[in-house]
Length: 183
Image (cartoon, helix red, strand yellow):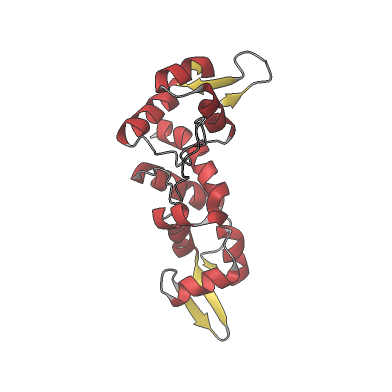
């Protein structure tokens, strides 16, 4: 059975402010169990803590938070802040997407591809024309490979650049500990 720690213990372990930790927990950057009590509101699994520590040691800016967000002084906000997504995270997200959309057929219409990827139809068509997404033109309609859409959506380039995938990035950070524990 894994043990849990509180947010009060976690901010000391990670050497960050309470305010920054609350932001990370509330916005899904660090997966946790939220309880209704006033004390010990957040419960964080120790395995998650170890993963977060390793990520922070490897890249101190891995959460992609704008600089100056948690400091008292004014500073320039970085426009190109990045999340740190290692290959294990991307593979886990790709397998999660595959499992979630297993009921979809292997060949998708443009409407189905839009539902699956949360991207606009015009954006998908542009990526097809640039040969980043595999599709065949049958008559006047495109038939798009489900595998190709999942691979494209779960690529690091797309996740880091697409504003529309912000919801999926939060899902990545919430599902990774569960998937990594099962491996």
